[in-house]
Image (cartoon, rainbow, N blue to C red):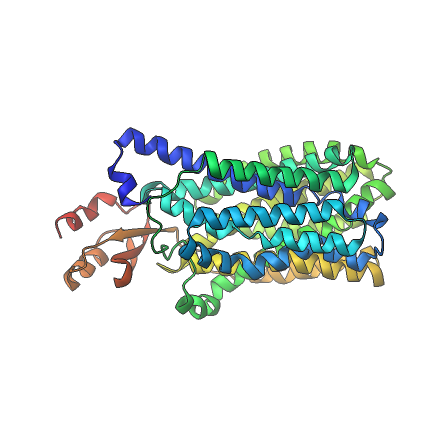
Length: 461
């Protein structure tokens, strides 16, 4: 939050202001992701009826949003630095709504592809994260980011249930029209609920991309493992949804309007089942064990889904463990990224990570469409299985991460070298990076040892 906002409110007012900001931004993010996710369980079923439809082009329609997201998310973040966060978010929501309307009006596969591509062009994720930085204090920012991350997980679960339900009243077009409506609800949230920061200054390095850090981040072996991982995870997600709806309807004879009844209990139980593993990963610091287990479970379930596709209960069991592994990895991977990224480079690392995520979604749709068209469903499962095996090898050989968190500490512009040495000697501080342009230092600290009160000497510096 800007210092101006901070000092103009009493402490209770600041807490209320930040809760309002985080709640409104989390709801804005979740509405947008809900619209993107709702098509996953139904697109392949309904797109077959579109003019000019082929499995390859259906795959492009499924993954097109990932390509445009990867292409424009960094540009939108940079634009928000110059024009302001809220104008860029409004622009992104209008583009997203336009893409949804184009897709909703289309009766050809090419119109569907263009609409999905436009949806992805509303790439406002980085602008929303930057606005979170503007509207929250340093000590509450991690909780704010976690709230937004949780909203994405909830959106995914709700979307897999809501998509089949909405399509009962108007097919795929009804889902796109609802998505357009959600975009306009998002505009209302921006107008009425999201506070306007009095100042939107330079983005913090831990929340924004820094060009001079691109190469160090790309060359970091441990970060590369995570970038490969998120690419593979979203490749697998989209490729599986290229074939799962067809298995439910064609092989298991479940009417498409009833698919939500399969997804609902699996997603709920999968979420409950992952909680003990998250406690083991974070509280007991066994995150590598949980990570490797989740990748291995995902690898095992991919061929099981194919092998058991004609046996309902075995298929459902495999799907349950698939969703459990996916949700675990969606939670563990960002946590690992935060722990491994060097001080002051978290924003750049997350930018590269998110780009790999969206490219994985695009590759999952387009390549799976090609494989279905030329080689059949077996090739889709085979490619996904092979990629996860490669990822499993990378996960097994990964060094266990240290449980370090990022802290940004403002310093006086005239602070001496002795200040940096004093910071390095504080118990629990593992890395110190001075950024003179921001008049701050970025620390990587062990939260179980580090005491923020040990920074009190800076107030007198």
